[in-house]
Structures are given as C-alpha cells and as structure tokens.
Image (cartoon, rainbow, N blue to C red):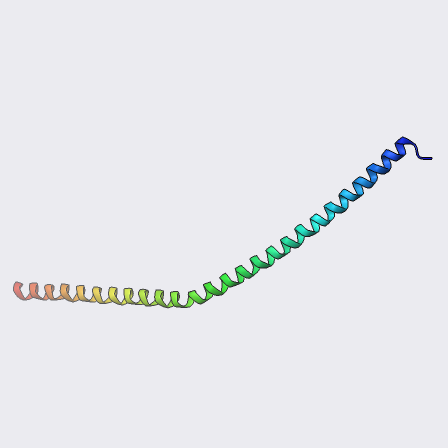
Length: 97
C-alpha cells in the first residue's frame, strides 16, 4: 500500500507538473505576443523609413536652393561692395590729381 509520505510526494509531483504545464502555456502566449509586437514595430520602422526618404528629396532641394541663393547673394554683395570701393578709389584718385 501507499504510505503517507509516498502519497504526499505523489500529490506534490502532480501539483508541480500541473503548475509547470500552466507556466509553459503562459510563456508560449507571452512569446507569441512578443513576436506580434516585434512584427508591428518592424512595420512602423519601415513606414518611418519610407516617409523620411520621401521627405528627404524636397528638403535637399530646398536646402540646395537656399544655399545657392545665399552663395549667389554673397557673391553679388561682395561684387557690389568692390564696385563701390573701386569707384571711391577712382574718385579719390581723380580728386587728388
């Protein structure tokens, strides 16, 4: 027959087995949800990459335009100042003679 100790051990083993099976099922669900979350995050990152690539072209064009106008304006301004200074020097030379 079964002693009291053997009966207690049997109950403990069955209880632990049931708890481990339940725990394993819960871990499976957690990992499945984690997999879904990673897939959704990957989709979000891909969409973000597409959006940034779409915005990059116009921003680059605007930046090039602004830098081009700044450079052109600066060259024009420098030329204008040199022209004015050149006329001032010519006037001083004419007045000095």
